[in-house]
Amino acid sequence: MLNIVRKTQKITESKRGGARLILAVALAMLASSCSDEARVWEQSQTVNNCEWRVDEALIFTMPVNDTLTWFDLLFDLRSRDDYPYSNLYLFVTTEAPNGAFSVDTVQYELFDESGGRKGGGGSISRFAEIRVPFRTKIRFPVKGNYMVKIKHGMRDDLLKGVASLGLRLEK
Image (cartoon, rainbow, N blue to C red; front, side, top):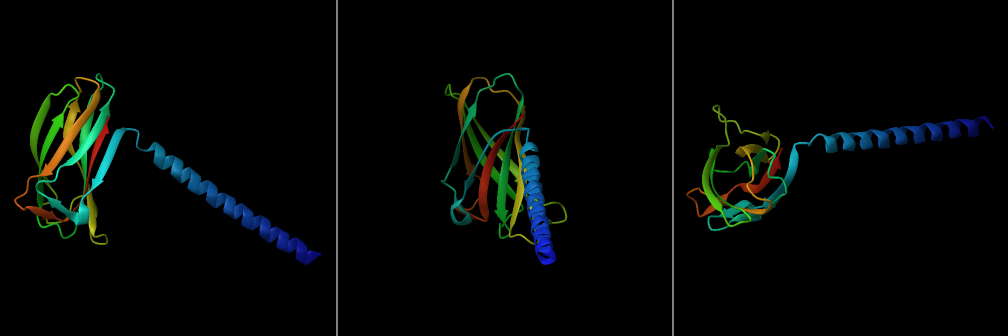
């Protein structure tokens, strides 16, 4: 009978350990889901084979339901370690639901002064991720779906090393 009690005790301790693990994972998931309160909307698009053609636009449709709040619009760029340049030029066309539009040319430095890649990733990962501002402290004039078209503005017809580009709207 003593052996049965010991086995039962081990099983009970094992179940407690499993319950603790499940509880820890659930708490971690809850904490991570609450840590992104600034995000209103975001979407990311993958570039086929990490080769972005000069005539290929990445198109985002961003719903806007608030014309009173100040927002920040950001890009999330994911590039491979074989990206051939230290910077990236983007041509960005934004079209409002009422047909008004703006065209911007923006440039981002992807490497710091010492030659290291900015953003997460780097020596272990083949990819680096960087979040950069596109427009800050903006208000949208009308509610509805805004279309954002992005093309690369580099000299290459086929820009290699860009894995994905995301657009993010934050309060």
